[in-house]
Amino acid sequence: MGRSHILAALLVGLTLPGCAAVEEAWRQATMSDRDRCLSYGHREGSERFASCMQRLSMQREIQAANRRRQEEIQAANRRLDDLRNEFRKRTEAEAESRRRAEMEAETERRRRTEAEEEARRRMQAEEESRRRAGVEEERRRRAEAEADAERRRRAEAEAEAERRRSEAATTRVSPEPPSPSIPPMPPAPDLGGGGEW
Image (cartoon, rainbow, N blue to C red):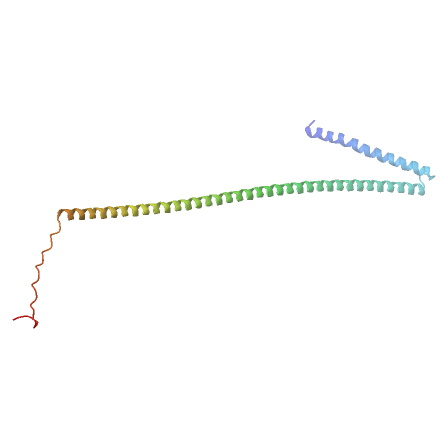
């Protein structure tokens, strides 16, 4: 026996119990309808009996259709609930993702603000350091200028003292010659008439 025959036999074996169950349910329902119609006083084979059987069969089909519709509604409700749950989960996930993104963005903004503040403080410190260095350089230049001026004053004072010492030494070595004496002038002649000739 080939593999295809084995599979066919298995399918037939699986299908027959299902068909038998359906046929048994149909037979029992038909027998129940027959018993009910007979209990109503209808003779089997009469028109009223046929109408009763038809009415009960239609009621059973309507009930089966209602059950199927109810099952479809319940299945649709379950699918709707699943969709709602999926939508809720997706919405919560998106909200959590947005919250995390906002937290990361806030952390990044805070980090940038702190970095900018730190850079501003460093710039201010560097400017203050340059300002102090400039003030110190100005003081140093002024001190050097004052020192140069003091050295010049001292040099000039020393030069003036040296000049005065040189002049004093020259005065001691060559004294000043005495001034020449002036002879006395002769008396003026008397030109008046009061004297003797």
